[in-house]
Length: 177
Ligand SMILES: [Mg+2]
Image (cartoon, rainbow, N blue to C red):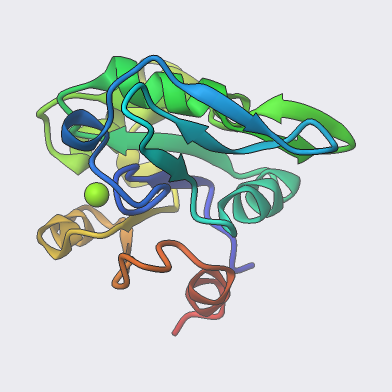
């Protein structure tokens, strides 16, 4: 069974290709596609931001296998990150939903990624839930966050800032390479 019980995702350069705290200025205007999906948001300076295109498919696949999804972000601007997660709209199980609804817990702040994941697990499974008892992974573009492996969390390095988290990378993680 290759699937984890909890999959955590960094946001900047893992879900979208920018630092939301320094590159973006709200409010955002959606670019709405024919079917109601919003893949691109335009900020007040005209800067366009889109999520990495494979992300919704990856989140949907995880959810269909019962995996809980946590965001783990140290951004200084959680309000902006939340605006993006609410503003992006994707098709999921035949409905158009904000991307944020695919996440089971949102974790923010200067704490380490292990703490984000640990708090996310408590948020989802209850106060007594312990990170050590769950099979977890972290998708993240900063290799220093590989330290999560000390706590048994599989680190998946999002190496390419152009492509971000891709289906291919996800498949390689699931197949154990
Ligand atoms: Mg990042």
